[in-house]
Length: 466
Ligand SMILES: Cc1ncc(COP(=O)(O)O)c(C=O)c1O
Image (cartoon, rainbow, N blue to C red; front, side, top):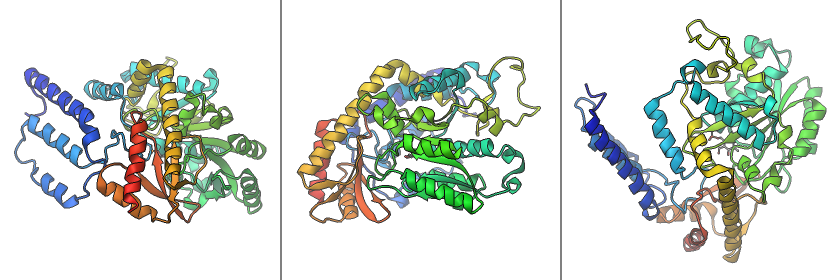
């Protein structure tokens, strides 16, 4: 039939998978960090698969691994200075294989009690790291930060307008509006559309010279919007912006949220890991007061994609936002004090996302993560020093390991980065700060990146300067 393979063949294929994965991990540093962008070549190779005749299993695996080797940015490369995408932890890779093999269905608690309890255990453990009280912490695993931020909007809407779930936007007396910094992640623009409140509901609050949200401007915008008859329902502070790793002043933003009685969400998708390391923990000051938090374990905690977390200190809000009971879902857990994930989150059928976090954390411990985050922070500081030595001016201010920089000799940021990528020696990118200034961006994203790799990036940039 082709769907199953006999035990002996499976054993051989497991060995093949092991050798492909381990061979990739051992040799990735020798590969060009970024791929040839040749869609024609990829499509030509895929055109051999017409699915009218079965392909031998070992050949199919070999094919997939070869193309992945040739056609992807290698986030496991030690000179990958990218957009928060990890070299995956070994335990995370094993966990994903276990999850695929056991295939727990987490829509209903009774189908996968262990998996559901692992995720709840992790929600409480992470809530505690962010300073939440155990009794009031709730949350859910998500595909990533975008889904967590979307959840944040829906939950805040439901909290402010209790009939939102039933009546939708048409049931609201006033247009809801929410506030993010001009440097916030664009998943909020998308979430505004998905919630039906429209992209115009997003208010981009100006930032100060350090790219942090200005609390005074935030307060003034809210006042003006209220005068115009709009309904502010949410403020989002970012802890670790995507562009520049900058952290909004949470205590000042929280003060405005308190005064205005508006829900406060902190998008700590990447920068939330700062709470794990004493040298940078101060950037998270005030986060325990947030009504909800986005955190992505598939960023700085280096578990394989995708593992987002939405956390809240309001125990009933997720159920109020998502509960839609049906007759056909399993009822074996009725009467038990447990949570059915499909009544408590956006997804229905769901994969066991939490296992890769659980096993990575169980084996490394908080102390292992503390050491890793501290190492990466040191590498970030070293990178900024090394850039300065070669006349690259760092233009962002953050203790977190993201450097945004320009060429003091006036070289064009995009051209320089294009040359670095074409050389295959490293991966970094460009972005725009303050709406106009194109800069180069390098983030220490890979936990295996060491001082030599930092020096090698700066050498690659120097060579690309021409
Ligand atoms: C601050 C921030 N929030 C949200 C996201 C979206 O997360 P994801 O890509 O996991 O959906 C990102 C992605 O880089 C991010 O940097």
